[in-house]
Amino acid sequence: MRFLISFLLLLFLHMQVIAQADNEIQVYASPTIQKKWTIFELHTNYTFKGSKFLTDPKMAHWLNETLEITHGFGKNFEIGFYTFTGFAPGGGFQYLGNQIRPRVTVPDKWSWPLGASLSVEFGFFRPSDTAKFFWQGEIRPIIDKTIGNWYFAFNPNMDFVVSGDNKGIGISPQFKTVYTIRQKVGLGIEYYAGLGNFNDILPVNMQEHLLGPMIDLYIDPKWEINTGVLFGLTENSNQTILKILLGRRIGK
View 1 (tube, rainbow, N blue to C red):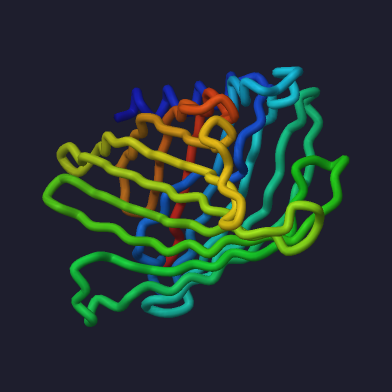
View 2: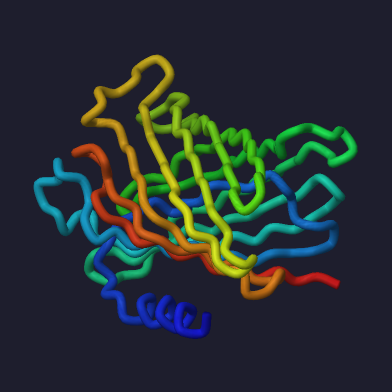
């Protein structure tokens, strides 16, 4: 376990700042954080190789860092706040925007056969400091289920843009499955897709489809550690992304 943690930290510290990735790559689980507790999460996403359609591959070379802070306000309700930042290909730090996310989950007393919750994100964002901010968000239904050592989660997301040149509602489903070994290590697969807008589904080669192996480490209930590599399945997908999620819960 110590070796795995040390390896992840060394890998992060020695990466050169040369990759563009999505700001937050995560399949959500249905439970909200406990009332009066707070979790701090750092999402680090590094793209080794971008879309095959790029005329200059270096244009994809960013390192994205997103700080997510989530606080539980009730037994089944939380609010998250995001700050998006990144390092440009030349190494310059850039502020990219902020977003807020309320989320509610189905109470246990309802005795549903599946875990379920719903989050709505909204805020402003820009892909780089040379672009204008635009207002955007996401509606994220979350469904999950644990069966023995297996865990399954499905997020049939709808993302939307309400200002700028790319207004519309997009389809971006996500899926995760994990097998837990001795309650310490989870080995799994994560899948992410971007299919285009509801009224304009993209051709398959222009869609984004990412799939890859993941590791979850359960070293302490207060810590969240998830890492893995995603590989593009279509020409327009980022071809290779390293993602690292480090989280720390604080409460009484």
